[in-house]
Image (cartoon, rainbow, N blue to C red):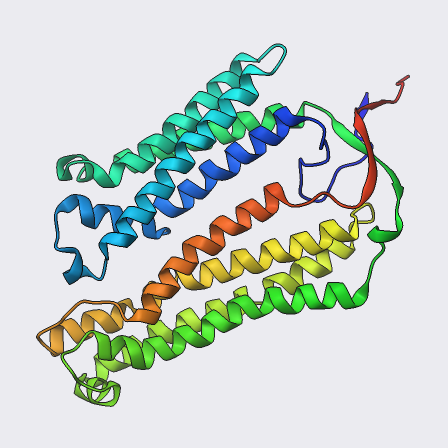
Length: 343
């Protein structure tokens, strides 16, 4: 029977000398970031490139040509580099398993399809979302196959804990405070945007008070309900870093650096979800304004555009923080397995 001696709370970064695994980590992180940015309505990339591909006037949709160039260039570069890193890591394996090879190919193909879909003709996008389901299925199979290959590749036994790896309550408290502040600050900004900046940006020179007064009682109630619902969900998400901190302390083998990294990832993920779900909370308000106060401009306020962009950025940052964080300060050894004889 094979018994795993040690496993980091959240990482495959223990083998710092194994460049093959590091390349696979970087490639996987880049492709995961593309999936976040390009999956509608999760990421802003699909909207930005879709508007440009449809031929809409960019100034009338709140999408600047610079944003199209930056998003398109970043996504294309990440796809090329991420795919090259995964292929190089696969080729470097002594005996690549067929399942691992198929998983890597599936992961790259699914990511490439997801990236290309916003640029596809409308007839392709009108197939009830089927192309997106195919892309997600390919990526899911590829990620599962690659993850299973890593699980079979052995773990790293930790060396003795060094002085810099001691638990420091002040450092842990500061990490938790910053991680909690990220979703809370987005919640506060999003509330102001929903009640003030957003209504003013969607109408022709009216103040927020005039917009709310012009709505019917039912429309105003539905709009407030949507915003309040988003605020409640956001408040619950802001508790995620504290929950992770409590759970991480219950893992005896977890290094303090791993606990802090788990809290940072939770904060980035919570902030990303708060920002990403903001449009859901304000959707009813936008529809009510469009029906009640023509001419409806349909434009985003400046803060709303920032919030939408931050959602994709924070979620992608959470992926990078989880996969590519600095290893805990320990004297690590080579990947080993401890074999316990069975009777």
